[in-house]
Amino acid sequence: MRLSKTLAAGVQSYAQMTYIRALKRLPLVALILGPALGAYDAKGEDISLTVDATRAPQRILHAKLVIPVKPGPITLYYPKWIPGEHGPDGPISSLTGITFEAGGQTIPWQRDPLDIYTFHVKVPAGATHLNASYDYIEPDGYSATDKLLVLEWNEVLLYPAGTPSRDIVFDAKLMLPDGWKCGTSLPRAGQPASAIAFQPMALDLLVYSPVIAGQYYRSIDLTPAGEPIHHEIDLAADSEAALNMSPDLRRQLTNLVAESGKLFGARHYRDYHFLLALSDHVAHFGLEHHESNDSRLGERTLLETNAGMVVGALLPHEFVHSWNGKFRRPADIATPDFEKPMEDELLWGYEGLTEYLGPLLAARSGLFTPEQYREYLASAAGMLGPGRPGRAWRPLVDTAVTQAGGGPGGGGGGWTSWRRGADYYEEGDLMWLEAATVIGHETKGQKSIDDFCHLFHGGANGGPEVKTYSFESLVQTLHEVAPYDWAGFFRQRVEAVVPGMPSRGLENAGWKVEFNNQPAHLPGRHNPPSALYSLGLQLRDDGIVSDSIVGSPAFDAGISSGMKVVGVNGHVYTRDVLEDAVKASKSTTAPIAILVINYDYYRTCNVNYHGEERFPHLVRDESKNDYLTELAKPRAAK
Ligand SMILES: [Zn+2]
Image (cartoon, rainbow, N blue to C red; front, side):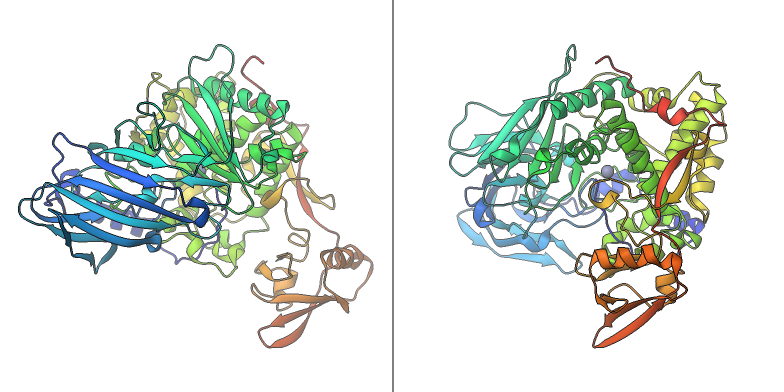
């Protein structure tokens, strides 16, 4: 997944966590047999799921489920731990209008008082099928607009407890508004009819196969010449114009597919679909699956001049996940169903390595220019250097572990610089870059990160498959590529508290991080706010303080997250006025007077800063080889 979140959680030593994990780890058989003694009758008959999305523009879906059963009590789960989201955040509050019927009669249901995702019903004597009928209310601004829908199947199904997801087979059908078309990696069954029927699919693969649909829909082939496996991008947008992909972007995305083949040496899908929703009224993120990704960007993204950079910061990451995260998955995240909790310590591998390889492939495929790639890395380094005083108290692994506890997003309310965010993404990026430089150095250039990816993510070209790994097997594979103390390398960077900018990988690769007054030109959240590295202040457009870096001039002057900046040196606040005040601060001894509203009171905070605007950039260190550029060179023939 790729989503910026804030983080709030407590401190716990890694030793404590390892101990707790050892206590929690149960034999697989216990997981399978836990609440298994229901009346689900899996033999010979699939579960039928029909989703009526004809009212998608009204933001309500209706579903009917028919489960083969035997008489007796049965426990049903609504998917809770959503793969790729790494936490217990299935949208249970959107499940409404639930009724159960069996043997011709409506039967009562109860929700489990200890787990709101669990439902209990009793199938009456003589009944062979349990029918469930319910609605799913599309959350505002998430997946449905007047013109499009992204359907994640976990939102619209219940499944019987006690059987692993891979052993429960669903026959799914989908009804769409008149004239809508759709794209998905889910193979269709039969000819198009009033409902689109899909081939019988195991529950886990069904959940991994979302559907994108809309009035304005277009699919574009991205299969490189000579590539036997089909790749396409399926676009649904809020307007027809938004579907216009430039030939350049199409060529870069086709390059991305070719470069992924060179990097990994094998593909673990039957074919691949980039599902891209283009709307200003859906949530903007990406969610990975084996054979597709569900990515969502602003409506006019493809029409913007920096489309390659915006698309390149998202789609390559989600695509890489097909190998790293879906095929190779930390064992404690590869749970048998969507009810068993995940343990997220290895997200620095699952997400961190993906966050390194995604932008690397964006650079190799031309989605990022070499300069954009460097600015992207500089932005990550700046954020984790002066932007993260929280690194002085909190080890990286703790930002991963807490993802499973409701997640960094559970905090809200700012203070990200001190709490830390989901840093296993960006810090993982720089840490894996450093690992790549160590491979190059230790093997005297004979091996590279590509050799590791071939060994770790390669194998036979096959369909979707999960091959789990542990910390030990990960470092063992690295050791096979380049003998080195990899366990020590990661324990120091992941488990220890290591303040200071994690820039060693950049330095090994021939580049230094320097701050100067030239802004970067990166899209969206990758572009550092103008007062962040000078005053220590991050503001929303309306002046609300989203972060005031602990220890910075703004913080020392009394400004905190949640306050609202309304004036600067006697002027009404605008971004330009604040920028002008920072630029002028160098030639005066007077502080910058920032007027804030703190609940019911005005307060003037005198910020003692006398420098320029500051933005992070990479500057070449001529005493070293430019290994960064070497790593980012294309491998595939164009
Ligand atoms: Zn991800």
